[in-house]
Image 1 (cartoon, rainbow, N blue to C red):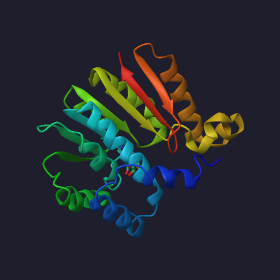
Image 2: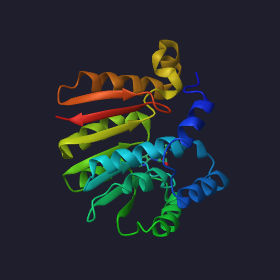
Image 3: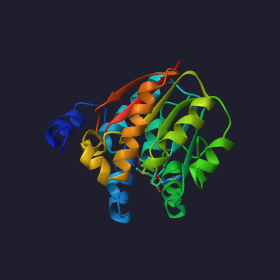
Image 4: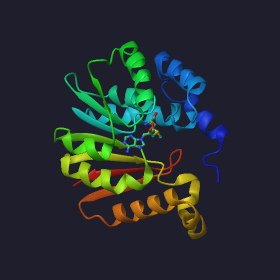
Length: 214
Ligand SMILES: C[S@@+](CC[C@H](N)C(=O)[O-])C[C@H]1O[C@@H](n2cnc3c(N)ncnc32)[C@H](O)[C@@H]1O
């Protein structure tokens, strides 16, 4: 299942404020030097994350799953002047992308990289999250959600990426074959029933669950 059609995405990109040249360089280097470059958020969702962050003007952003730092750079653009983005990544080799590109974008003092398992590191971060982006291992989404929700301010926003999993969450047969599809379907149901939040599943790229803490 492919949605939306690539030509629709191209049209959307052509009619959105362009992302900066640093992000284009980072996207090229990610394609050259990593084995799964499709994990990078990309220009359409990146522009969406940037605009949402600018609308919310967060002081404290937390990202789970840095990869090469593309979404971190998009989200950081909306930070308040003294704001900070904490991003957690388990793969040490990926840290050098941030070490190179965060300074190039002038974000070296605003983005803090953490190396390790987010399940262990998240509880150690300060409370008062304004904006959260969950984009790491799918079976752990409920764990990340619970920890973050407790640390979020009322009114804060949480985003969880890939919740449609190429449409596989819809089909029971797919869910039986694919552990991630099954975990994401359970996560979507859990959020839907959660009375502590208001939510909307945005069919952008691979599905973005948007959650506001009440
Ligand atoms: C889809 S990629 C993130 C993409 C990135 N947010 C972006 O849009 O450019 C997922 C990342 O999560 C990392 N990851 C997986 N399990 C993790 C864990 N338990 N703790 C921290 N990071 C993890 C992976 O190494 C991978 O780099």
